[in-house]
Amino acid sequence: MPNTTIYHIDVNSAFLSWSADYFLREHMTDTDIRTIPAVIGGDESMRHGIVLAKSTSAKKFGVKTGEPLIRAREKCPGLKVFPPNHKLYTQRSREFITLLKSVAPKVEQYSIDEAFCDMSGTENLYGNLVDYADSLRERIYRELRFTVNIGVSVNKLLAKMASDFEKPDKTHTLFPEEIPAKMWPLPVRELFFVGKSTEKKLRTLGIRTIGDLAACDPALLSSHFHKQGLTIWNYANGRDLESVTGHDSANKGYSSETTLAADMTDPETAKIILLSLAETVAARIRADKAYISVVGVTLVTCEFEKYSHQKSLFSPTNITEEIYHTAVELFAQMWKKEPIRLIGLSTSKATSDQTYQYDLFHKDQYERLSKLNSALDSIRDKYGSGAVKRACFLKEED
Ligand SMILES: [Mg+2]
Image (cartoon, helix red, strand yellow):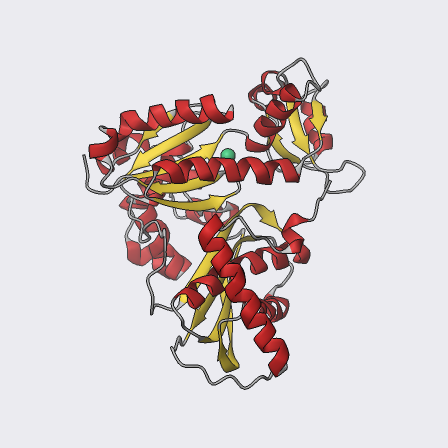
């Protein structure tokens, strides 16, 4: 057994599965909608009514997540469409993460229905960690009534690739020695972060499978894809640079990012994501009693293009609102209205002393925000990070 063991845990058809359980519990249907051709879909009266989640039997008709509902209905006559219930999903997501935190030393939530767990060092507690992944899956089903896939490996990339193998309700391993058999035969588009245009370019270079990419000369990739060339080459060889960050260590600058489950094209959603990132980052800065004076925003498009903008602040800060407003300003300057896959918020030039010059906020406003922020931090310390949420997270959308 390797020293590091990472799980990637992914709820199967999360929205559909959470709604199915809700309908049964509330006696709204007799049928488990997981067992019939059904989807959760956005508002059909709007142009962008799309499939948000699908049942296994809808999948058999070729229904795909992200496609317009009209097309899904053509493929699958009699398809049942149910509206999303975001309040329910937030609640179920919280229960999922809480259960994981009760068993794993480090949990990093990756999206509403996915998380990484660093299980290293828990063998004495749980025994063989591949077997334990099966027990954990069973426990999640027993206590929360939905199924998950668990990918087990030595890093986040391989664990994530593994959880995406056959679904639903399965544990898969992808240890380094299994890469040639399990990962290299897959088409290159299945590699994390390879989008359609990258796939097309790779095909012109004769690269079709992840194995082709792994065997390729990294210099060739760099010349066609710049820095990203090396990243995807490392991925294809099973190398991942990140570890699970249960908590960030100090003095590195503070940053956080979110890879989105679906491409983001709407600035209001971007603002909510930036606020959530600003909350996370600013709380870490304050926990270290630090201040930062540079804020940066990074966007990665669905075509894998990455760009960043940053701005120096007039004075060092650790106030959520100030970091958030700067990030929104940067986002507005840089976003070219293309679909976004990843949003990152970074800060740098951390110091421990602060000479605040009250430019963005007046002195009393600053002091009020500062007090509010530390009050929120202590509530979160005591009751968990979900205890206090900004009003915009609580807004009901349906
Ligand atoms: Mg999922």
